[in-house]
Image 1 (cartoon, helix red, strand yellow):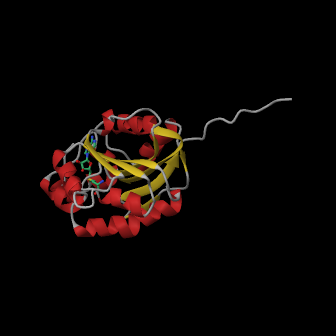
Image 2 (tube, helix red, strand yellow; image 1 turned 90 degrees about the horizontal axis):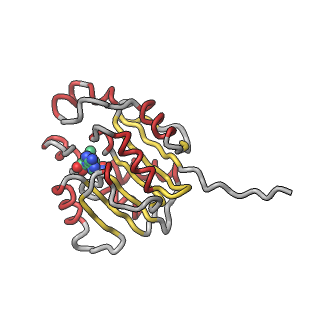
Length: 209
Ligand SMILES: C[S@@+](CC[C@H](N)C(=O)[O-])C[C@H]1O[C@@H](n2cnc3c(N)ncnc32)[C@H](O)[C@@H]1O
């Protein structure tokens, strides 16, 4: 679902960008490691700050940014209009129907997008579908407890049904066969959890004697 005015102001501002560059990016990199040479997807890329983080902090070779909202994609296009960075590709798409082949990304980032999606389980399944074996899923999400608090309800607009706790989110991640690299970190008064999970590597063939 698209952001309301209050959340557009909240996510598309210099303080949010600073936090993503100085805190969230480095934290995720410490857990998941660099992605030199990798092909990466940023789902719900918004204005594209996350894409810059993935290029600078992680060293990705290519980043595909998708977002459901044309205004957010326009913001991202504006961000990269001057540099015309050949590593960046932007498109209008929803997480539940990603226009990419199976197993086509080394990593996928979800910087606070899935809590906007009613069928977030289907979104996670799509993310899993496009990840290669050993691919990494970097996530930063908002808990249902936070979304139920008055300040979120008063100012922001999120799906009312099928919200998730950290435990419910991690259960689906695990059901999809991804393994957590470490226990997710809680930040911002416990409202947000941040972590990295990995698709298992391809089975190595054993030679029996
Ligand atoms: C809270 S903003 C985060 C934006 C950006 N990732 C950031 O960290 O600044 C959530 C973003 O997800 C996008 N979004 C919402 N529902 C979506 C969906 N079903 N598929 C893809 N993007 C979606 C919104 O348009 C918005 O840009």
